[in-house]
Image (cartoon, rainbow, N blue to C red; front, side, top):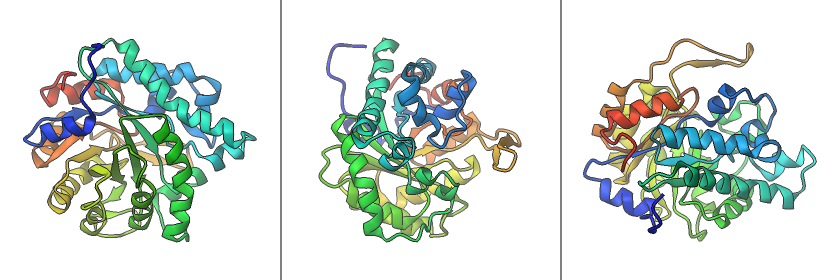
Length: 312
């Protein structure tokens, strides 16, 4: 990497509003799974922060090499409560969460790229900690204040590790979004807010225009959008987010395959394609990548489709 200080992601986004793009990585879990790592544990990829951190660095490196400009850390499922169920105390849990940022930074160093590379610290929804699929339903029965109380401590830990941005991702419910918007205030690190959606609504059933509007005046939020959804749901969401908030839009859907929870397997076929990527860009998306089942090869295709081929 160049020794010169890289521009901030926020500054870069301001410069790309006219049509440029930033390439995000793909799914952490499928890259780790492809490397032979068992992710059946409730901690999912966060377990490897404790047991095999080098595997996490290698997964990030694969995406940087493929053309990604942003690595999203392996902290999606990392919470004090989740680690606590494994007998890991709060001090060690905080160290593991912070280490997720360091592992992504190490991958960026190893990539040796001449373009800027950034790190987004992932903070998944409350339902991810429950590990029962409720992150795709929302409506946990908790108040906004209770959800803020859950999210704030780990966001403080992640922010202290100095990522370029906090990725408030796979949010199924506008109520949880409201809690996250309160929880990131004063942390000194910008954030993006990304819902998981079904058609034109959040997974909890709220209209997307209402959900995105929550972030319109939030100074901490530098981008809004969707992730962990069907590719077919993206274009409408991009148009809505851009219109309602006026902010850069972030999108990173799944491959289009469907998870069969009973069989614990993916079914169907991928519908994630480069022709969709250019439509998302034209609709207003400025950070584009993939989520579950979208691997390095697809991210290379994204970079080429956007004309960046791994450069910003």
